[in-house]
Image (cartoon, rainbow, N blue to C red; front, top):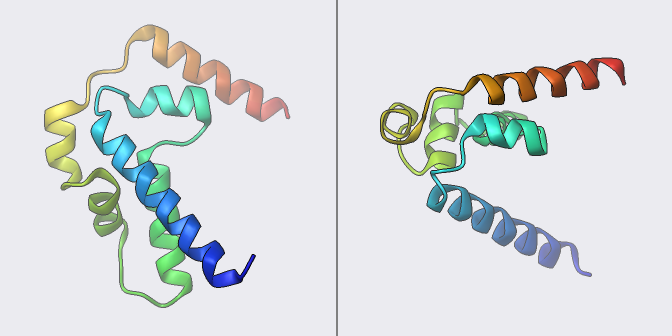
Length: 101
């Protein structure tokens, strides 16, 4: 495959992932962390790091707005719920397993 085609496909898939996460606000970040070991904030950190590597002026908060589709504070007020004890326990168990690896 031609490299430019690969980059286009990866970019399209990433945009679709962002759209999917923005549409599914019921999915909490802690659930993503437990199941997939990453969340929306991780994506924003990776985005900001990729920008920094390329000397593009995008900071973490700007990257969060791109990932969340709105300012993080707005998303948090609208959609973020308090983590349940079960979610926290699952997250802690996942972190312990990672530490053992």
